[in-house]
Length: 402
Ligand SMILES: Cc1cc2nc3c(=O)[nH]c(=O)nc-3n(C[C@H](O)[C@H](O)[C@H](O)COP(=O)(O)OP(=O)(O)OC[C@H]3O[C@@H](n4cnc5c(N)ncnc54)[C@H](O)[C@@H]3O)c2cc1C
Image 1 (spheres, rainbow, N blue to C red):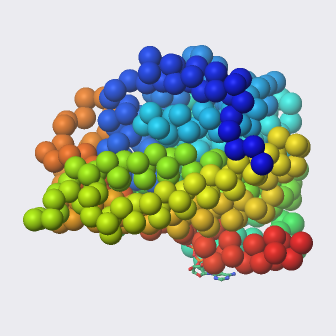
Image 2: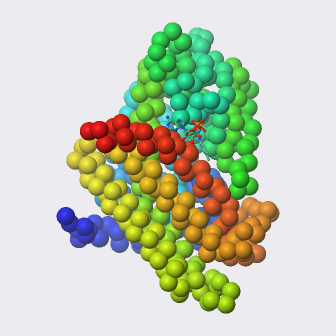
Image 3: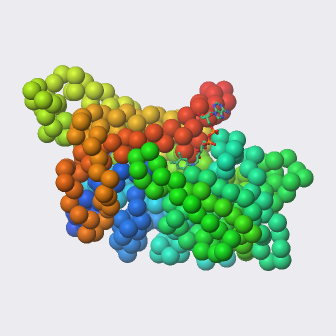
């Protein structure tokens, strides 16, 4: 098994490093370091998106004909790893990694030509209207109803936990277009504008004090037929494809490895009463080494799946393994991060914003300031995109049984 990169891959890594050194603005790095949420706020993410779009590196996961870079899976991995190490802002998963692959895989040629450039330019910022009160893990039981009315559907129902619905101008959603058939067969994948009288967004404030998620109420909301992706009733097939991308379409290890380095650096800096820097005690060294080993093991699994993908195989249900391991590790890293800061980390300020260009310098170190809210927000990792128990069920049924 060859674990090293080839000389071409190392040259590519150097090119990415040089680009990041010259083009990643300091205020975006600071904004990312100060982000306590699961997602990065659009004022940071969209600025970084525009910089990458200008050199054609934004859609690095898309096919070349729609604006992709043509990079190999390993090059994409190197790019993600270097971005994480440099502290670059995370890109919007919802538009770039969830909606776009659905559009170029299931969309009509006219839809691809019309909708994908708007994602790249940032004109369209999507939110995901899948979950409903009572329909999360059992998504196929969703009740939102879409009734055909000429050239559009009238959509009625409510969605919940809708990340960034208050920032989004568009929603991709699942709605029931047929109640007479098996529940999975009656679902369609629709797009709608958020800025219309039939859409109401109500905030849900997380335990960490952040506004990331929302309730969305659809009251005769209009979804044009020309914006339905796939055929009527094909929504469940599309949703399963999308959820596989949500669980394993990104590589999680690069950011986790970068964060383990940051925890280690913080442990070396922060002092634990009379004992001196935490990083010097055997117990902290052991804990951090354990986290790093787990992140490295995850990296190996991700690279193996990338190898399959480069041989033309779909990522498949192995993505559930990635989702499970990376979610647990995310929480372990964020817990250690908070413990490193101890009592200082618990006193987080209520007067944010912290984000983006022009954000005020925090009173304490940024690391301490985000420790507690980041830990609290990271509890959501083992729930969204399919809870841990649901991933275990998928692994039992589809991976272990094969
Ligand atoms: C921060 C955050 C952001 C989110 N963003 C979005 C978004 O943008 N768009 C969107 O559509 N949704 C979003 N979600 C919703 C998320 O996908 C659901 O919360 C998730 O699918 C779980 O559904 P539920 O909340 O209804 O819990 P339930 O399905 O009611 O589950 C409750 C508990 O029962 C367990 N359980 C359920 N079924 C099984 C089973 N078959 N076997 C074993 N145990 C089971 C679960 O593991 C869980 O512990 C988000 C959620 C969070 C927390």
